[in-house]
Image 1 (tube, rainbow, N blue to C red):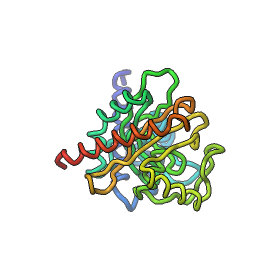
Image 2: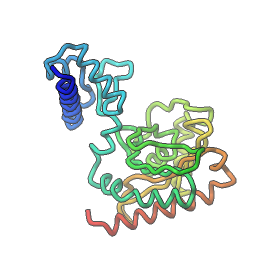
Image 3: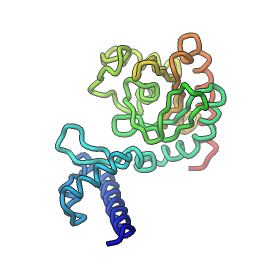
Image 4: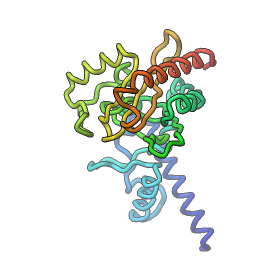
Length: 260
């Protein structure tokens, strides 16, 4: 087979595996099992070593997620989750978010992002970077912990996701006690925004505010900013939070004015 033929064959196999991952994700009864190397080997008619190599390559590129110390198989990766598996309301939120995130970058000088709840994590569905050299970037499609990020705590506070059973310490600032986290989330809700004070990564901070499906509608997701502690800190958080909540309310209004 020619080099071109080999490349086409490899591409076709990779696409077939992605299709299998999507089909698996669509079946609530099977999605938790994941896609095994043995299944891929059978479906493609290739040796297990070839199937394993295809899955590893897809995982490296973000199209699949490898099982973490378990017997479960591969799951659909973050590169596809930002386009797949969203509710109608979440898709509308994602589709409308970009100009408001750009406005946030202009107002605050920090990277901006939008997120929704996805299977016990926060899924970044859109992100805009700042031009500043020192910055905190959250890539589109990235999955983030709920208990230690501003987007995650925002989703928890407005009950878009249940409180995680496990609250691992990401830094020395992470809230790992369930009762303390519940009290903290009540404060988040009363303030109208969530702050990550170096709770997920040392040196990185964030501020996020909820977005709703209408003025009196249910919450759908959140938007926020991330930046270094040198620029997001107690001296600046009040003004930055005001800007984040303002733009979040503008996005809510845009959702109100946009037909489903």
